[in-house]
Image (cartoon, rainbow, N blue to C red; front, side):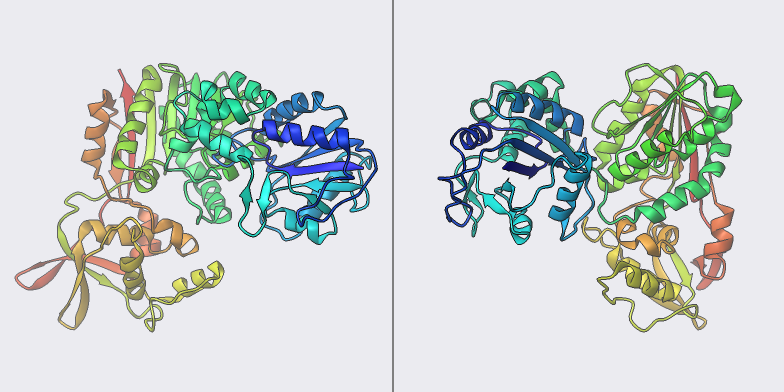
Length: 530
């Protein structure tokens, strides 16, 4: 007879140890399942199996410990039990109704057939709603901490209750609640590898979701494809300014920029460090490295958030590169987060080092009122405010709207959850309809109007909060010198492929509209540390 304990197992408790040890010593004959029904099984427990779910996730609030640290703690935990303990990592495969079946098959496969768990030879210990999946497969479920299945109340704190206490404790290592409930096997791992301090940092980070992403609405398949498509252009723009040595790419996505830099003969002796906050993209970086896609072997990836602190040692980096990142910090974090990010990069650079930042930028005179003509014949105008649950259907619907109708949808959706109100009026001059709004809001729309695949995510983002002069001033405040090659410019491809025939900007003088040139879209800003 086996005991199977599925769970993320970020932390082990004293209760868990006492409960399992009692079952091993006394058997299951006098135990009752989650429904109060006596088990009456007299077979000896021969093995305890820990199924460690989300084994491929780490460095997030939901999964702060990597699998290997969880396994170390479980191994020490199991050594104190009086029966053999086995550990199997179960990768996250998304929300699937048969995850219990998948877990059982993984154990059978990874144990090379040693453990074929069935309702006849295995009892499951589970006190969360996951138990229902195993019950549906016919397994007997032991309740452990569970007191009432209708309300999911527990007799004693759950492991995650202890994790949350660590996250908010001033001194978690001496906290009475933690000391009472945390098993020494877990405590020793958390203390040795400084997981408590890491957990506190993760919980303080309001920008990142519990699973380690900036946003939960981004379609990363689209995002990754876009990053790869434009990587060569971005590298070409930055190559001549890169200083050899220690080179960091913060927000490295899938490592495309680093991949190109590794091929640069000038940088053959350099070390490359990719920093990515998104768990999904970080995993792809690691997969690419394992596939041998980087010509330089000295490439290292880390999943970290560069806002909450330094990601490199002070005064250690020769080049730091960021692309399409800094506007996301303003969008998903705050102005203070962005200012701290700028300070962090300055602190990390060695004297003479450079921070190369390529990103969107706001127009000059962004508060100026302009007349915006938008094409209302290039798509549907019937109902710009339809709701769709299916993301693909929603994207198809948005793509079919006219440019004018899409603006109406944008005006309602843009940073609505953040409390922003896009103000506009309309006017007709010489039988031509215009939107009257600020140049700032006009450019927010024009910069995003074609991102229909990721509309929900893009509606959280702001591109035009600082113009180029403001960007330079904020870098200079922390000590950067601005490289003379820095510039703001209008992306001609965007003008020709997204704006021409779709939108025009005007000022009105003496009652007549006068065309305004399309403003800048992109900046190439190089900060040099003296």
